[in-house]
Length: 551
Picture: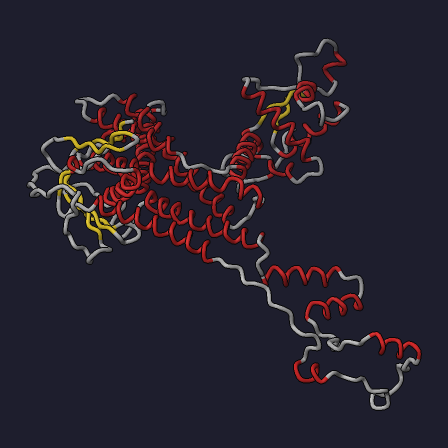
């Protein structure tokens, strides 16, 4: 029953790839074919290999399945013809000679049909994916990297533990990267107001902005920590042996003649996965990491979202939008019933009509009614129309009334100025609070208020993003160019704690030097509240900051 062009009736590699198993998607009865194929996939999950026509009929949705079993049987035969299914004679129910010659078949999925359904499932999943920024995945990646460090420290690393840790690490990183790409794509469509209702956008914009800010903060802290763990594994040359252990375990079930090749292919695959992970979190020479690019893209999306909100509010307030007005006018012209209506619309829209600024009083109207002037009378022969000298001189017959009062918005401007000044002062105080006036220990930074702590986290994230294996001191500038931070690792094993209203931020102590570039072009004069600077000690080993926050 298999078609001559079906993949099941050909030898592998004898002819080019055949996509006939996808033919049922464009057939007239495509919905029924899709239901039948889904019934076979569901049966396969229950470890059922063969299905009879009545089994398929019972598995279909009662609301949409055909009324007769014969329609399902015909659909099964067409799927066999296209190569999605295979039909075998059904001898299990033969009880008489006439039953043997009666046409009875059982059906099962072919490899081509199963591959086609897998491709369609992937298509549906990707098409419907909205994506998300997975902060939890960042925590999981940190956990698995720490587990790899513990495994690598053993004299004889366990292949099973190594394989499981690398598999979980790869799966979580793949989910993080794929979902981040999908989310940023859907976010751009949201910004462009594609595939979204305006009311829905206005309803969830605040939650979306909070979601972006929370992920950015997690990416700053955890992304730097992940980069440090990756650097520690690569610096001690522990990655290669771990990848070879995982590749050997993956190829353990290969046949003897293919074992060596399978292990080499598996190692190349694991090395590519690790390289992708490292490049995603660690920047290289002339190349920024994907984590840093994602952070910048997410940060840039927030003002874009606010600009869309401002544009929508302007439209709702009735402000002029010339392009939208012309599009509406063009639609009115296209919907006009005839040319006369179009001319009338033209005169109304652009004011190209006869002059109608003269006023005719009641006496003139009575006179014209009693003695009408024929329309065929030439203008030079018609009775004159008396025009007021005031109208001739000023262009207006009636006296102008008192102009409307101009709304006084000074109070609203004053309130806005107060809010802007207060926010600017709070930001200035936060910068002044963080300025150290020279290198100081992180443990002497003292307690920070929420605004100063947020600014400190952003500066710390910028510094950690530039940290490389073997680095002892790094310098970074904030995104707005207002502050500079210099971070130097210590080797005395001391611990630093930064107290905030939400908890204690703790980790290995470091030397930190923060400069306000907006005041005096980098003047390092320490404010009254800043701790006194201390000398920078020398160090012999390379360590990097690994800060943790205790809630």
